[in-house]
Amino acid sequence: MPNILLLGGTMEASAMARRLADRGLAATLSYMGRVERPKPQPIPVRIGGFSGVPGLVQYLTDHRITHVIDATHPFAAQMSSNAVAACTQTQTPLIALTRPAWQPGPGDDWQRVPDMAAAVAALAGPPRRIMLAIGRMHLAEFAAQPQHHYLLRLVDAPTETPPLPHHTVTIDRGPFSAEADQALMRAHAIDLIVAKNAGGTGSVSKLQAARALNLPVLMIDRPHLPQRHETHDPEEVLRFVSP
Ligand code: NAP
Image 1 (cartoon, rainbow, N blue to C red):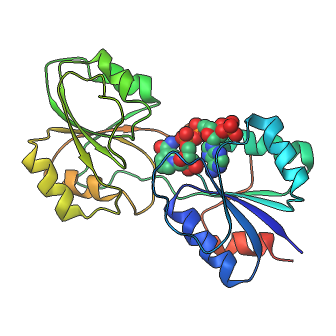
Image 2: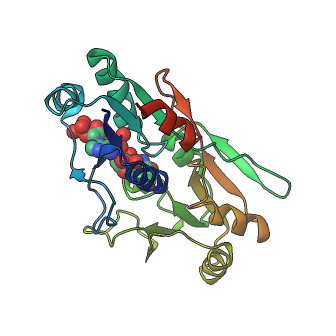
């Protein structure tokens, strides 16, 4: 019988946990645990890192894991690379459940950059009012462009003051609506949105709002990952892990 490790931390992973539970498949959902108050889940949960590739190899072996589903965020490059390496070493079948990247459409005004450092560099110039919708981990890098006012949307209240001289924090974990995001952007007189190309529906509202308000978006492309079996289709994942 399969014994699945589901690497989570996304809406899609939580939905996958539900599907596995409904099928009666044995599975454990793993979280980094960076976010407070994780949602209740229909399958057992383990929280915390594995201590790199060796730790993950040990975990797969100790728990007799038969399949790994990587449903982490497309920007969780470390975890996804570690999963490829550990599954190769242990010959554990691995499938990645990802969401298609967003594409610009009519009415969108995107400038694309390859990574966070390029996004910071692209912000050189006179002060602007920027919505920085990138999570909390990379905020410090934007201290290199201290002239702007940054609106930070975070899941949890920051424990340390972000090192940005002019900023406002709004706490919300989403999913968000385009109407509410438009109102937020208007209320803060936002003139540029910085976003990661996460894809999916959970946070697309900021792009819909930007389009409606004719605001430009600085879009950070996804990190490159090692070759792996990848699908956008949860049904394909179920077929992959089913006995
Ligand atoms: P990362 O840079 O790829 O991973 C950093 C380290 O966190 C990994 O080396 C691993 O620690 C641990 N880790 C990450 N995901 C884990 C998981 N599902 N279970 C156990 N340990 C995990 O990842 P990240 O960007 O920090 O993201 C952490 C989690 O937040 C992921 O599950 C991701 O899906 C979720 N998330 C990320 C973003 C984002 O923008 N990056 C947005 C929303 C949600 P060890 O090396 O000790 O094993």
